[in-house]
Length: 337
Image 1 (tube, rainbow, N blue to C red):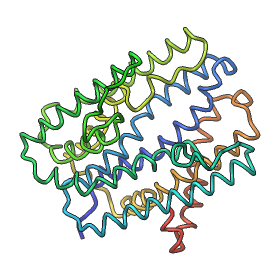
Image 2 (cartoon, helix red, strand yellow; image 1 turned 60 degrees about the vertical axis):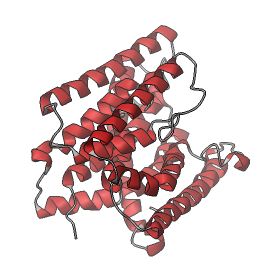
Image 3 (cartoon, one colour; image 1 turned 90 degrees about the horizontal axis):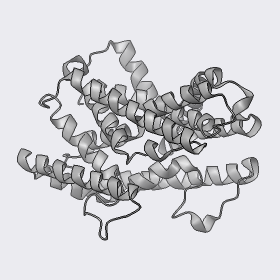
Image 4 (cartoon, rainbow, N blue to C red; image 1 turned 180 degrees about the vertical axis):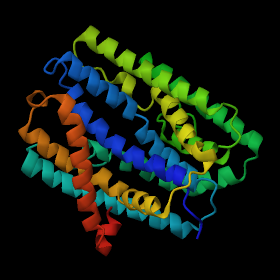
């Protein structure tokens, strides 16, 4: 069996923790004006830094799946698994929100709106899995020159789409293979960077500087607009934002090349990383239950963000991991996490 690439596993481990950071800090950032300015700046700084996480999940999928040659039945099983996961967790959150949180939801909206906001990731991955076998053939058939050209075209499309959104416009016809969203782009960039991780022209220091500068730009824009308009601004925090794209891509590349692009851990560390990473998808799915429970009984201003954010992040991560670990003891549990 081929050994895991622990650079990718480390990115996965960091990313699923950062996703929880995003959801926790969002709760405090959206209460701008009710919490202190210092608490807001602290929460926003963590929220901004954590934005690299979700793009990394798409890039990990691209690194591991694009370029492969897989039988069609494997794609069908992968897609079926995601559909089952979506159905189960949509039902869980529908019941949770309706009978516990008291949040109304119309089932007729299930195709266009998740029963819980964070399930949007499944809605994005299912179309990707539908087209994945064709995307794999495309990648296997391209020369290096064509791969670079495709990267240039898709990058230009992403920039164009973003600039048009800023102007309140959209293309009359979306560019094929890219569409009007950015997730397929992240998938391809993950594949490209992983394949050529040892041959990219920028060194580690410039890549890290670019990541930090892009993150700082996102933070500065968000803070400036928030103060100007008097309420939390999220426009610069979207995954389509150019600064978020640059931060995520450079973070991914930096992590890929740590340890000369092949991090070596001891056997104990490998087991711990593999254990947490094996539960990462389930943690992503379940952690909102615990965060929602906190929100039901606590306002953001009830406890200072300086303490609440790290404690909630650590607590929700730990409780979610334990729950998922128990669920995965059963065959059916492994199918839905």
